[in-house]
Length: 559
RNA sequence: UGCCCGAUAGUAUAAUGGUAGUACGACAGAUUUUGGUUCUGUUUGUCUAGGUUCGAAUCCUGGUCGGGCAACCA
Image 1 (cartoon, rainbow, N blue to C red):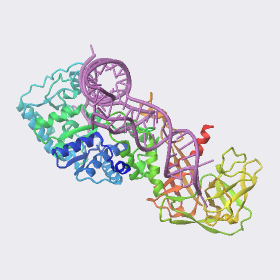
Image 2 (image 1 turned 30 degrees about the vertical axis):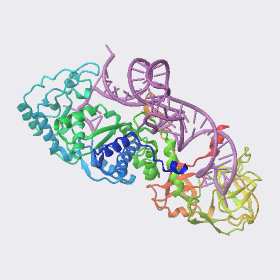
Image 3 (image 1 turned 45 degrees about the vertical axis):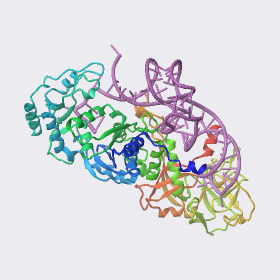
Image 4 (image 1 turned 180 degrees about the vertical axis):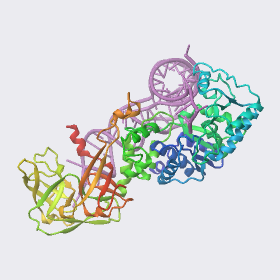
């Protein structure tokens, strides 16, 4: 019974169901998908979901995935974005079959347009954009035919060629499909196919001054590449009718569009406009500021590709509106990091401990596990001496109930070292605690403890003479509210003022001097950390990727 | 006063006419040299009203609620 359950396949999402049925029926022998970003911004967590979907499908089923840049609007697009997008996809762990650009097809698309004109299914319109909007009608009222709608095929052909030749200024003419101005679907009311833009394109330079609209580029590109399943978000549902109409009228390969709901993440925003605003108005330091929901930011923050892929897999794909809980993302990050992170001890807010019965000048080298989850049991060396730093919050003169840390007369274990007892609290004239005098139990050394003493708490610590200084950046959620994008008023009013806390001089164990950019660390009892690119030989900088779960903090919150 | 999507625990997602499950969260406990990890248990759900059926989350009809559609953006 349990065996059957184990072998039970994970249930399919609605797109996988469509694909399996297409494969079973023999409609396709393999599937072809594409990831179609517009190179005008950085990829974020929502794109990660789409990437995992498109590439994941062709990893699961026979076929492949193309990377196609939807670069039909030269004024907003740039190669800077092309490079960052490619880097992000690679980092996530996916490989595209072909690197393509909608702009590769400009010649072909122009011919498609001429074909439509020759079939009397498209015409050149001289109307201004205001006039076009006016005649379009509204969702509840039909539109009206443009006065230029009945031009002859020859005139349209001539005009369109002259548009291409650069004879007309921007905005003076468009090419429109001739469908139905009274259509209930607004997108079918003679949609614009081409517009004039005398602009420099990041790939085609000044070769073109007319550019196809999304609707006359995307589906056609899909068709040219024989994309079998063209997956996009729900806002394109109304476009599907036009997508199919154009493919049918052109008589080209019938790609099919399927729509899924875009993923939203709690406590952040993912609209390109809002993200751009955060960057340009300096609410964050850049697109890769570790508080951003961009892939480059998550990478810098220390998230792993595995954890993001796993997260995308868990949230799934469906058609209903959603707001994914960031705590699931954090769970996935912790789950992976717990397995791979090397354990280190770092004290953020030091309180000096002097072990009065430990010889001055003596140093012992304690060995502590690199990762208790790892089977090999690799260890590192941690120096122990008479003077140590512990976390200031780990000592309380008047401890509440269930406080398992240091207090006058109380004992705790120092991780991988000895059990100590607090004998005396040293204060300066103002009453601030400056040090603790403790005594250690010599027989309690970690690994050979014969003391028989049981303590509830274990603290992290750093030897004063061996301590290394490090800068630590503690990140919290960027917004104070779950869904800042849907809040009344300006979303920026909901920015969390405490989303970054910098600790300029933390005390770290010396092993951290050998930190590498591709290694992940768990600072014991503190969280997961990664070396930041701002690090230098003189100044170590660590980003907190995510905190550890903290049952004690939760307990305190309750009271 | 139009058209198009959608609605299952707090969140996300299954169940494809036949016992409403899973994950995260929350809560309780066990273990623990990280108040971490791990393990165990508990809690909470089919928008609504009808209909079809032996049987409905699933099919049908009406309603309610949420989202989208009137860029020379994608």
